[in-house]
Length: 114
Image (cartoon, rainbow, N blue to C red; front, side):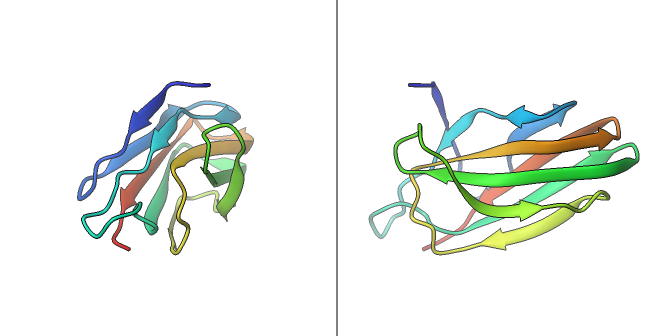
C-alpha cells in the first residue's frame, strides 16, 4: 500500500505541485470531523501555467487507498474551481489524465465540513 499523507482542515492543501505530465499524485488521508466520521466535502482548484490545448484533471476518492473512483473532473484549460460534497471517502488524490501544451498544473484542495 502507498504512503498516505494527511490533509489539513481550514487550509489550502496542495495535491499536485506544478505537475508537468500525466499521472496520479500522492494519496492524502481525509481527516476526521469533530462530529465523528470523515469530512465529506471538498473545494478544489486547478491552477495552470502556460497555454494548454487539452487538460483533464480528475479528483479521485478511495475507501482503502488502493481502489480509486472519480469524484469530479475538470477539463478547463485555463484553470478551474469546483466543489464536491457528500463523498465519505478516506483518501483523495488528483490524477492528470490529459496533458497537452502548457508548462504545469497545480491542484489545490480545501477540506470542508460534513
